[in-house]
Image (tube, rainbow, N blue to C red; front, side, top):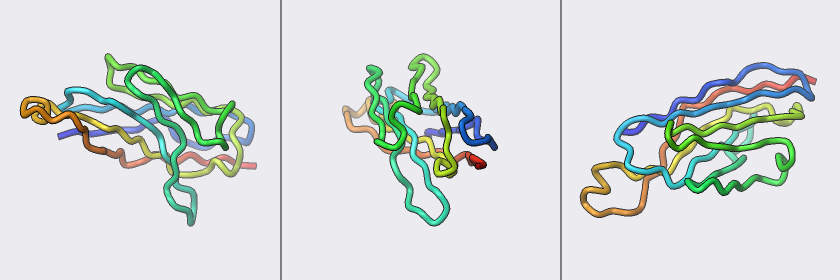
Length: 126
């Protein structure tokens, strides 16, 4: 019903920048929240940043001042600008969205469901 497709990962040297994007498509009525998570080697998946449909962002402490999350509601797309990258930022980055589908809205539901992308690898070399 809903698909999330990430793009923009790759290899970058420490101190460099990368930009990720994630487009949602399908049976979408609204997207109250979108976000990025990452999972490093041997680690659990962790929150990086989220943004609400009115543009309010939140960040995990380790990326504050370095990463910026934004979204284009008309395109159902969320972005993550990553600056001053560090080797410890190396991870698979997953897009996540809370989506209320058209079918849900028709029957009066107001709580969306979580959807995930397949992930994109970001590698930061030292």
